[in-house]
Length: 63
Image 1: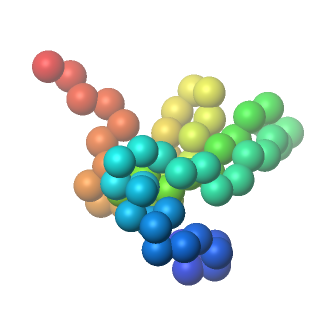
Image 2: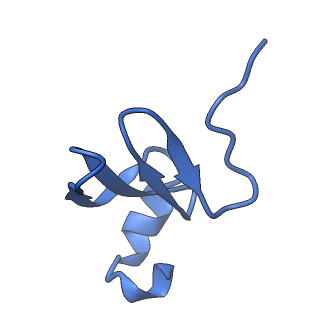
């Protein structure tokens, strides 16, 4: 969970302005995985999709 990561209070505050990268990795199915904190919520990003455990993050918004 989010409390397992050692992020300072200013990094959490800065996450409301821009995503903070926590970790970059790869897997057998995805060559690029990025774990980020955005608006104090954890986001897993792949080249094809964004996944969020938060309730208020909208990865796509149409006009």
